Image (cartoon, rainbow, N blue to C red; front, side, top):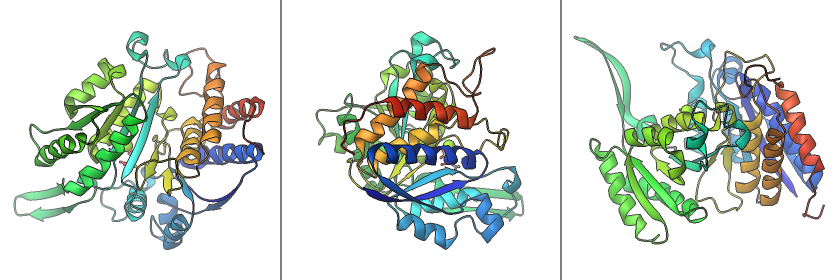
Length: 370
Ligand code: IPM
Ligand code: MG
């Protein structure tokens, strides 16, 4: 089969890890007989520098005309001045909103060999396997008014947390459907003791739950959830949360996996069906300016994002699984990048780590005719 992939490396280590993710994609293509036509576009800080905007029109057009978007990361100290008017992050937010990608899936898997890398005790990590479904196009990120201004008593700023019933309902459905395909437990996160949006969220959650009697729903306040994630992570199957809560909880959850460098994500415009829906796939880690340009970034989050892309946008479930298995095997055999290496352990660079994964991929059999 043939596919059109829009590739947007962005800034910082985005460039380095996406280079390796594309190698992984090509290796899958070679092994299974697919052609991935990769077309590149600027986004984020690099796009500001080159085109004066974090999301040039051509970049958006390319995304819309592709089967999937492979995205690196955006931002960095160079564009971080709070006074500037255009910010790299705007590029990503406009892409998410413009493509209607309201459902962000962030799976957190704990690999046995990486348990000792996490600061959390092994017995706590045991059996942890969860997915956070983060609402991605509403809440504080997009609510209006959103501004800063000067008053006679000093400066003031406002952001708006706003959700419609329809926005809440559709993301909850994604949570329920995903839970149904897994261990059938959904935790809905809110701050219903304080926030009106959260009270609405909880009400809608209880209504939608009636259509999913086979899924056990519970509600957790976001602060309790933050604590439970660290104290008892194996209690979770699928967590569904609004945009900002999901942003914060997934950085926290990354600690369970040992490193931010392990977390992939899929941003979708609907319920993941294994179908051919446009989606954006990005590692959760960001641009990591402190290590950018040194060739030591962990490429696994980006490679695992490619696996999600194969599964959710390209209907290539078998290929997705093969790539995930290759990553798991490489880790199992002790391959580690600097973020995963314990004192005294050897750390592989970005490219060498990818080599290890691709070696495993090549050595696996295929059950798909090529
Ligand atoms: C994430 C990031 C982004 C977000 C930034 C880069 C805009 O932190 O994907 O988690 O806040 O959504
Ligand atoms: Mg984040």
